[in-house]
Length: 428
Image 1 (cartoon, one colour):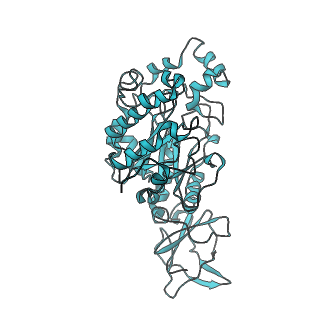
Image 2 (tube, rainbow, N blue to C red):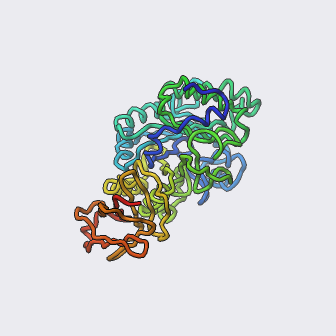
Image 3 (spheres, rainbow, N blue to C red):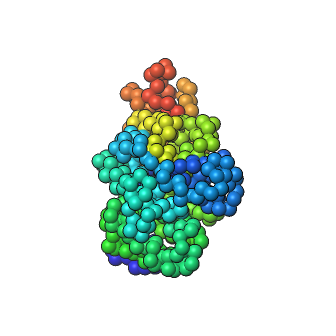
């Protein structure tokens, strides 16, 4: 199909099925803001430069730590990434069970992680580490067939001279050619745009750019885009819809049946924030439960990690991801390629997902000797099993519920931690 540069045509393009099947992705915010790695608790460290200019709490920290004359641009020399190993990172993403990875190619400060011709001396090859970080990661991630590669790209830049002088000049001479440069060079499977809120989509020329991507761009059949293409577009236009720390479309509601994705950090910041301590991070159980709750409602989870300036993923973040991977190794069929069940459970500790062949009752807590699975009618050939446990489970229909006897397992015999999945076949 050939798409036209208007929202009716763009919105008619289905979100490629692989994305709705993937369910779990890893987000990454990494750039010059990873050097100061500071925000007051509860705020975003990647907004350091903007809040520094506004002389908010960031300013007091900056003066105390670096001095009044130390400019944001001076952080370049300390963005060294000497500990960065793209293959190690990619292996972590695969071990975590992620099916896609999305990194900030350029955040609102405009600093690029690739040698962009449109950001001379403000990219990771010309200055700082002198490495093509996007290129290294793209190559490494694509060694893992199960993991798709994606890029976050900020439409606006806080202090780009074109943007401050004339947004149309900025869009025509900088934003669009730079975005095309990146897409043609690395051929991402996902483009997560952001920073769209200052202007409507016609100023960003969004439908023109999307038409090029869908008609002529590389990987156009599998390319997935989000809904951040203008101040009016979230939860209205584009590809999949986005939520952020639970916030939906700047206050609008998600459209029923639309593919959507929740993005958030393991902590309160996307970029690494040195002020956060262990209690500010979600536990492994909370991360797994967030994935379950999101998927049971039809969404994907894009869980963010923030590396350090020298190229290390903090160990606590690695642990959370690996614990999610361990859980998914046992319970993957209840997550990947599933869709919401027609009914919601009345038990707040049970979430449903489904495939054409099975219903999965995902228990956030161990239910004891018996579990009642409501709004489920078994058939003549219904089978019930606990994922990770070989023996079939005894079950019966009673008072409109399917009652399942759970095995008596010692702690060491439990198939996994944090949540447990009952698989049921032949149900209505």
